[in-house]
Image 1 (cartoon, rainbow, N blue to C red):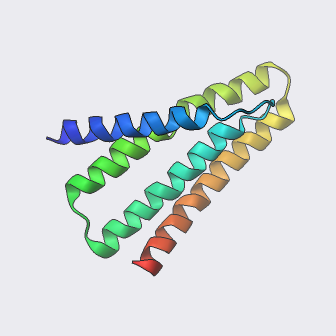
Image 2: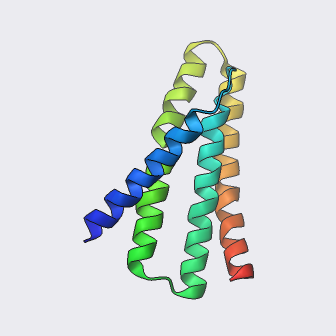
Length: 120
């Protein structure tokens, strides 16, 4: 049963991720990946906070956190885009991207947890 929950959630997350990737964007900075990872970080924080406060079922948490958030966020894409920025001599842009991604995603988790605990 757990494999089905993770698989279904992962499929949903991957479809959502692909959908964001279809937004027209031109530029060297990988903004769509950053936005995707920020949303995913916020969502996983919110889900974790909701699970703590409201006692969500283990199956729902597994579906949402491991499945949906796991399929939605893109650490491997973040890593590849960072590498490509460095290889194309965009060193400053790559540093900005890495710092923003890590810092803002961590802040997103904190904000998601805080919001869930406040409103639920």
